[in-house]
Length: 215
Length: 257
Image 1 (cartoon, each protein chain N blue to C red):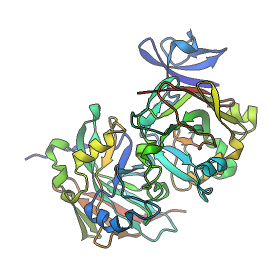
Image 2: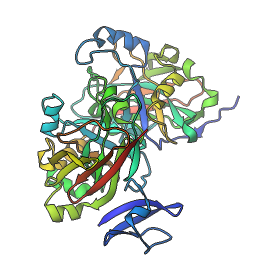
Image 3: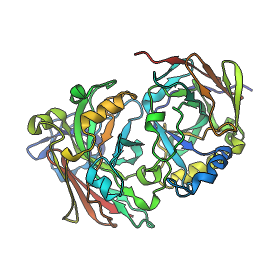
């Protein structure tokens, strides 16, 4: 079967879902009722990756000078067309400065210049089974994580429906369906000099080189 | 100069304020004058080539932080919004039927004028294109302590009216010295409910531009909503809320269902 891949670059707002994998949810569940949270999240917990974060596959991502390591957040993302309908899927790397607290919005951890690796090609949604997708994360050629969307808290349609209760996705908007953590509750971490590859069946591999920040 | 984007006669036009009227500029009708009440007002922001970054401050006035029982933050408490939340002047904002506490927030909005990266406070005003008024509604019923304020509270479609005018930064700087010297107020159905002054911001506009541009490059058209002072009250369907900032404008909004 021929791959129907189209060139891709985000045009709209990029939204992401936090805590959308059972492993991370269960890891944090014992603390959810305690301050400052005082209860498990009801609505999807969302964040935005601002346009300054977009980095094409193959390009470098700079780690700020005072930051030893960053988190790799391998995501399958939905791209919306007209009528708020999903039209295609793309692989992204939601890079973050590691942060333990999910109490306040993570702007200074997630919206740093370059902190979203974006696959070069989008695949029509009809050819992707979002809730059965498996992403493989490699650091310097070694596999460090498999992300299986069968393990999501909210399956893709449910996530979309729950968000649509209060906001309609506009043409070009993007929704990251979530990134899983490792058994210790953390995400794979990388440092200056590392190369991260995120791959999935039928997609061109997303590759980003992590470099030091220029002064 | 005060700039507006309006819909009229089946199309979108750009206009400026002139003798209490709208003078169409970039439009097939350039030069035509229209009354302020014969157009539909859109957010006064030119389209941008990629997603507009909209940063919004929480608890950036000491009195409002106190009102909400928080101690003043040590660094800016910032959240991000999507462009779908924005609507124009004289528009209708949807109030959910089950909401019991929905309140306005009158905020000075800074519109970035040129690419800002690693900007120092001393030069920060060079990067401001203009100012406008935003009303950043919140529905407290939906507050959750996860990435708070969470999107269900703060990123609702129609819940961030903005406008009517984009006022050139130079006009405000010439007339008032800086944007830190402006009175703000809100009325609900004509009754004054919120009153404050931009000098009471915890993190002023130059500080915010330095803080953000240290890690995120801002582009022309990006927005910083600088927070709201004390005096937020619940509003009901059909209430007319006017958020005003001295020299910048009076932004009218009505709640609907």
